[in-house]
Length: 490
Ligand SMILES: Cc1ncc(COP(=O)(O)O)c(C=O)c1O
Image (cartoon, rainbow, N blue to C red; front, side):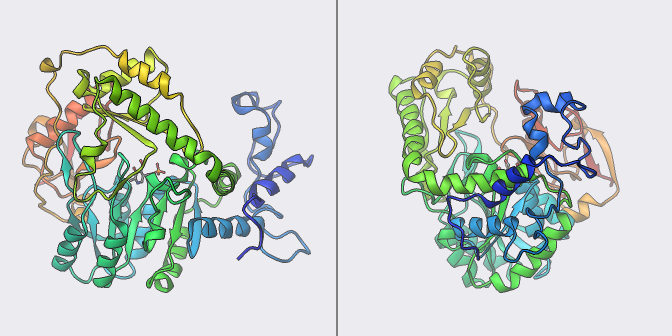
């Protein structure tokens, strides 16, 4: 472990030092810090961005400098991150939490060929399981019919699912959900451990949790064994940078070498120094500024919610979400607005917020808009609330709510379906056929159909309605309107 204190950012400092040297670069990256020859790059974020884009495996940053001893800046920042998040070991990811999910699924395959997974996991867990050859048994979350989204799983549900599918590699859950609904991780980890498996938590939306008393505790603080964390989402690092944490629990000795192997297998050999430095700086800022600035972040989200609610047009559904048995706490930095309650669809609200008020929200669905306040940031709550109050009305009778469909029945194993002989058929002819793909309304990126599940007319209609809505995007679709789908050949 490093002896550096958290007000240091050893990796970012080493990168900055290196960038200040007038190198004659004979190495990648090919722009070779020559802004005059790469004016487009230089104009994007200033010429300095080329200088700090230092080559991978640079001495004094990623490797030891000749004649020095002790940990490298890279090792120091990894140790500091592990200490900050309370992990036994932390890996930095330059391909998002998606990479962490892939690495984790591959590592878990060492212990068993199947595991229990929350059905509403992100598509990267499904993709990771397919590449790992992992069979999945699902623990079903409760579905919020008003907002058309899944929350979490209860300890009871996990217990039942693990009893029905013993001997698996892990229990894999998501917390917080896209709406900031946090599951009872302490109880879930006790259940998983009682069944002899580690608890893996996809905490992509919770990298900031536990850094201040105004925030719920993090999954690692509550006994999770492996945590996948999108630092870039709310915790302040650059997009695509994320972390994988190994907890201190009873499975750590077994898991560590496997995670090390799979991280090696699926990491770029040229990780971006900018991304790594941003993780270093995000950790430093969370550690040294949370006490002073986090209360302001939380207060500005609280104020936005309360002004929108007080104005009386829109419902803030937090208290209703909290009544779900699988919701233990809510992330105060998420601002969820039930827009249909105020006479406008989520997509319609987003359109006006963006184009009239220049407010860019995190996501919209047919029924809601989700905004967020980044940890340590704050927003102009009055401006946001006034913009909501000024939203136009839509004729919602003419646009009935798009309902989240039940998942179709499973006909085949996920990987078997994915690698079967397949054909592309018009969506109109796909009812009753077995999907070969994972297809997800995005966000939230929770697959509405998985390989091996049967297409129902409700699932197809939902995907089509989502795709053709103003901000609709369906990940895994063959075309933007989901006019055709890939199915397993009979
Ligand atoms: C629950 C969950 N896990 C993982 C991811 C993937 O994160 P990233 O975009 O950092 O790869 C997301 C993205 O939204 C997510 O919602």
